[in-house]
Image (cartoon, rainbow, N blue to C red; front, side):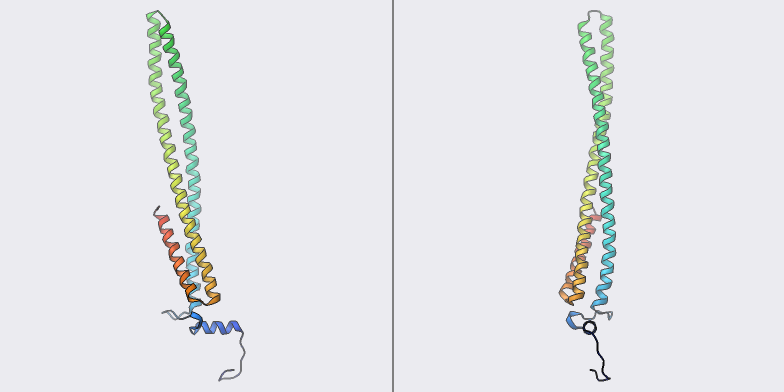
Length: 200
């Protein structure tokens, strides 16, 4: 019953009216919107930021896999170079044995020429192998950095998702402390996202 006539409204109408008038911790913010409008806007913002963080998390995970693959390729190439180095070492050892076993000076000089050539080739091959190993290590390091960043993005996304869940509970229960919890978690998620973007 009201002073202007008889009308009936459901419990949800009463709760919305009560929240709009400041009941159950609904309150008004400075712009005149009640708790429901405020939470709806903030939740939309959190969801948007969460979607961006989720995308960044997926991108860094893909990069980590790609970089790890590059490291594996470089390791294989380095291994091939070391095998090549070993074959040159074997040939050099055989040439040294042949040089030491022959009596003819002309033959000794011929084998010594081969030994010198194998030594130079080995040094060149060793340089290439070490460079490839260095590149493999660098790719591994980049992959680990991307995985660390991926975990940061995932943590930020998870915290924002929990914040959105708190927002839903706050809307249902009209509890102000849940709304503050939502804001706190949203802030924490954004801080973690900032750490991810700074590679920390």
